[in-house]
Each structure stands twice: as C-alpha cells, then as structure tokens.
Image 1 (cartoon, helix red, strand yellow):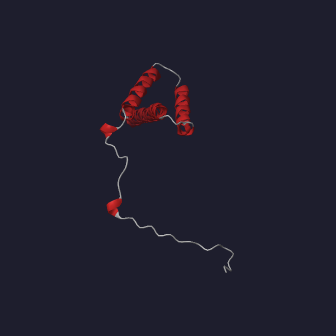
Image 2 (cartoon, rainbow, N blue to C red; image 1 turned 90 degrees about the horizontal axis):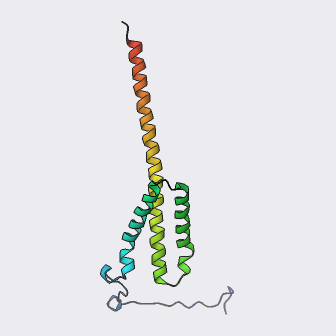
Image 3 (cartoon, rainbow, N blue to C red; image 1 turned 180 degrees about the vertical axis):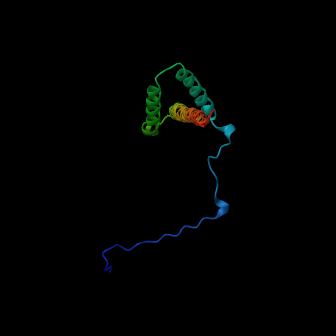
Length: 138
C-alpha cells in the first residue's frame, strides 16, 4: 500500500540506436519553394522602394507606425494562419518594414551625431579664434 498518497510511478526506459535515426525534412536551398528562396531579395526591394518614398518627405512617423503594425501583425496573426504562402508574404513585408525602421532610426541618430560634431567643431574654431585674438598683443 502506498503511504505517501501518490499512485505508483512507472518508469519507462527508451533506448535509441543511432543507426536507426533518420533526418527528415532537410531540404537544400535549391529545393525550397520559390517564395521562401526569394523573400530576402523581395524584402530588400520593398525596403529600397520605401526608402525612396522616405526621401520624398513622406512622414517618418507614419513609416515607423506602418513598420510597427506590419511586424506586430506578423508576430500575432500570422502564426494562426494555416497558409504557407500568406506566412511567407507576411514575413517578407514585416522584414522589409523592419529594414526601413532600422534605416530611419539610424539616419536620425547618425544625422544627430553629425550635427553635434559639426557644432562642436564650430565652437572649437570660435574658441581658438577668441584665444588668438586675446593673445594678439600688437
């Protein structure tokens, strides 16, 4: 009789012979469907097209909002969709939007850093000029 109140536990032992193990479903890149092979190129082309829009003064905040929505849609809705093609299209659009968002943020940060460096250089030139003027004793 079990005094601990738990039912008797059955321990199973599984032995696997390495000679019996097979790898299933590993396909070379050439054997993958066309959309999966081309999705990086398509995403890059979409990102470039959107960067062109961005350069024509389209709202940067709007582009970042579209990127956030596309990524959220892919992460939340797409896993529930059974269609392989829709999942690949969703991934491609989300990745393109992520590239645009990263590019936008990098451009803003880099342009801010460049502005600070230029401002610092101008201040240094002005201070050097003031020092030269104060040092002139003629």
